[in-house]
Amino acid sequence: MARIDSNQADHKEAQRAHAVEAKPTELAAGRNGWVGAKLEADPAAASLITAEQAVRLQAVPVRIDDARLQVAMSDATDFAAADEISVSAGRPVTRIEVTKDVLTELIRAVYGTTASQMAARLGAEGDDADHLIANLEAIEADDLHRMAEQPSLINLVNLIILEAIRARASDVHIEPFEKTLTVKYRVDGLLYEQDSPPKRLQPAITSRVKIMASMNIAERYTPQDGHISLRFEDRKIDIRVSTVPTLYGESVVMRILDKQAIRLDLEALGMRGPDRAAMDRLIALPHGMVLVTGPTGSGKTTTLYAALTKLYELREQAREE
Image (cartoon, rainbow, N blue to C red):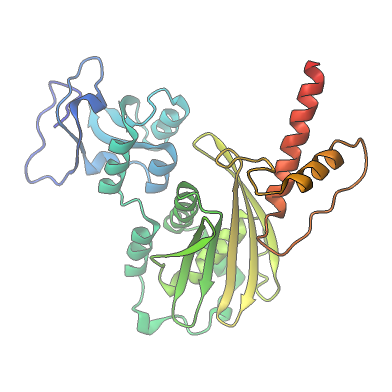
């Protein structure tokens, strides 16, 4: 067990604690501590932040020592994350640096990192599948807003998005069927179905996404488009949201553009040499318009971002000269 305070008593065997094996070199102890071979997280300490915060901040509270909260972090110099945890927990924080692999295993052991696990817990709080809401349209808009603002549901939707970003997914599809609700990630052009939330959470999940995208949650019978901007691991993520009404409720598609995770240049997008030369000539002109057309998901936005990146590079070169 890795201990940070040499005066801290061992956990009682009857106390449940989550443990993750770690190599001694993978832990950096505090100045008064020492390093062992196992890192434990006290459930009482871990419960002071949510699973969404743990994934987003890459940090897990592991124990409380003399009113201070010991927090394992992948980056112990991330003072903003430490401050957020301190405010949430209402305690001063002592940072412990661990490797990303150790922290990932710790998060899995303590919280269960998958959105499906959180969805299963939420589903267990409600009715059985035989008692699904028969008429989703009967739910009032005020009820949808209240359901979408439940903290546990907010964490579930956040985890769905964060897991998609970590998987380098380009799209997230939330598709309703008669008795099920499916969540799919598009990775490298292929759709992979994830463990799905309970059907009864469909109205609340859809409404939460629409609230995040500044869309009208009361309008469920016409297609809508929205936009979400967020920061994840110091990267700006842009998400375009589209909803389309179907027979069994609204289908939601979130298209993720992580500009720092992909190489935004026309060659990397597969544009042929002659076409790329023509595009370079057009965007270098001082005035005019370039139309980029195509069906949904064909890469229009990515192409435009690549063109803007190229234009920025040309301007930087001109300034240097």
